Image (cartoon, rainbow, N blue to C red; front, side, top):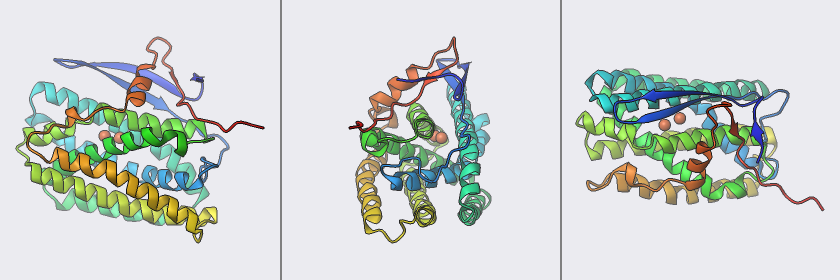
Length: 296
Ligand SMILES: [Fe+2]
Ligand SMILES: [Fe+2]
């Protein structure tokens, strides 16, 4: 395992809530002189799909953060502390994706059109809908994010074979922290009187928007990779889409049941264990381990 000191810098802050201490990790990624169009050379379609998700983060995560920040005065102290921590994590995530995306869009200028669509959609959601709607959307989005983390962890050795370790670490760090705060937005939704049905609608809408923009951006990136007309590329994306649906949909519908709480969903163990490898004294954490093919 490679320990990163120079390029991934982690500052540790410990937020002291009334009931629990929650670590905040501020990680900084740099991608000097490298192409981000295809950082998974063995399976370029992974880069297309992951980059599409990254592209959406600077639009969706600030929306979620602003939504949850508006709920703070109405929350009990414990939950307000946890919500502040979630907001800090989301702001840190989108900041790192913004850096990544800036370099990606410089490489593929056609992505600016997709970014404009994302900006328009999230502005419309924020300005035309009541707070109750946005909180349900936030709660649903967190369950979707948790489910993607579980699926990605389970398939990591296939998806990230020979991948760029730094880009892989960006995505796995983000997903690991999504697991860490998987139930906070749901608790906010419930504390404000939100129903299970509205939570379910929020999750489904979140999933539809994610799916739409993942396909839209992937089209642009597959075109840039010269794979737009390659049936194998579409087969892989379809196969992952179906496989991911089998992870996401049961979690979303389970959390819509009265007896269920997101905290009961099992954490992907390697992601959680990896976050624990963060070292407070040296402010470092290891890169995510990337499998490599043996050289003959
Ligand atoms: Fe996030
Ligand atoms: Fe999140």
